[in-house]
Image 1 (cartoon, rainbow, N blue to C red):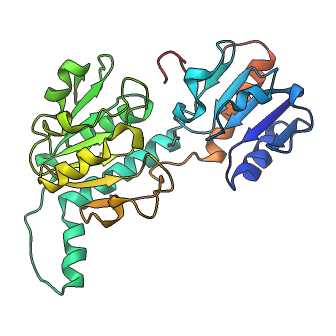
Image 2: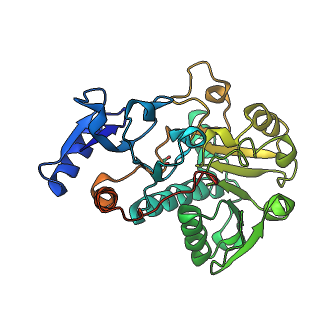
Amino acid sequence: MSIALEINSKRSGDWRDELLKLLPGTKIEIYPDIENPNEVEFILCWKPAPAYYKRFPNLKVVQSAGAGIDHLFPESLPEHISVSKIVDPVLKEDMFEHVLTCLMNGMKNFASYAQNKSNKQWNPLAYMTIDQTKVAILGLGEIGGYVAEKLAGMGFDVKGWSNSKKNIPGVESFVGLDELGSAIDAVDFVVNILPLTTQTENILNRDVFKLFKSGSILINVGRGGHVVEDALLEAIENKVIKAAYLDVFHHEPLPEDHLFWDCAPIFITPHVASRTNIASSVKQVVDNYKRMLHHQSLLNEVSLKKGY
Ligand code: GLV
């Protein structure tokens, strides 16, 4: 019996060290150095290659090393394999802080002042305050729901959009495609924290951008696949969208020749809004491994059908 790590990053070694502290003596191997693939029943993954699960004929559990599972090819996984995601208070709080930074940056015109500084321009601009600012959060899952509640608690005017009705203090809940327009209507900021599924892919498209308030700001911390890139550039060109804070992209790293790099109102962060904190997440991975050994249901298991 062994655990395989297929994380494709420098953090594989850190994950192995932390797991070994809680599972001393367990065989934990980092792909591609797997002695006997038949022994692997549990795999911890982040952006594995397609059909990765076929390497391990006795695989039972795929544990995402992050909050999302879209990168695990959920549509192609055989049904007998259970998939679990990370749910961690640190991940939620980090996302909240990142979103808040983007909001405040936009509200207080810091980007314009950075540009003015390089031109030695003294140009005071009207700023927004929290109590005047309307925000729509797309996606009210573990992370989106937390961000929405925290922002509402701070005094932002918050609407939320999701697949099913949510009861979050201070957050007006909108459901389904029919109500997407009402969720977005008249807000200053649209924050995307949706999971990427066949239903949500390309959801930020030309038709939806037409519903944005003129001069509004997009914050995308969901996935690059939610955004139709040409449509976003067009909406920026037409001044429907004043600025976009993008943390996620169709292709990561964002290719050097991508148009987003040269579009001044687009702010690019390299998928850092909220990174899994190994120290605070390792226990749930260990719990899931033990649950698998004892034939118990997993923590934070996702529905492969729903994709989240
Ligand atoms: C990050 O994008 C995650 O899914 O945790």
